[in-house]
Length: 153
Image (cartoon, rainbow, N blue to C red; front, side, top):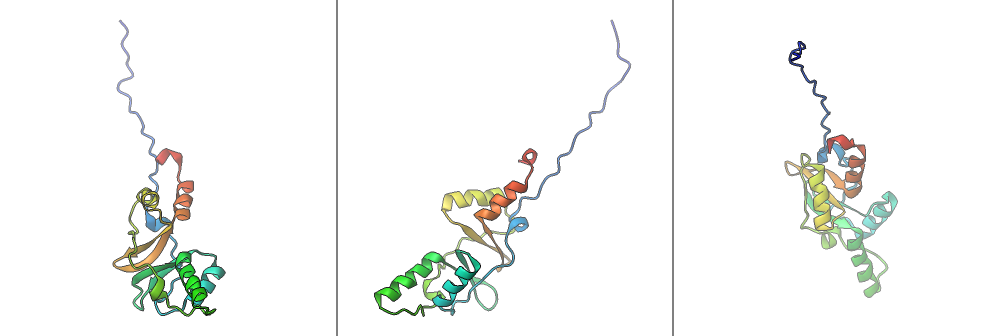
């Protein structure tokens, strides 16, 4: 019988760094926003200039009151054509969506990805203490996933 005299070995654990995957780490902070009293003509111009499909609508206290999108703008275009008025003088408040699904900056990015799939939305405003602090889009989620290491999933 052979006995080992090496004793108990300590197995060194390799620690994998846990990567941050919260909305706050990947959201867009510098947002284009609109006010409820802006004209749809202004909105269309800015959306085209900035090459974006929509943006949050905020009041003077920077509280979210709605979201305006390209689809909302098309409603004004159709209304102008119907009334034979080339001016898009309608107000944002008349066309914006007011029932807006929002997320918190500490929410997990994978939960938001699931919300995108379930709700068929393209972006969520991010609120902290009732104030708009950013926006997370499907592209932001894809960028976040691309940065993560496979071993931390």
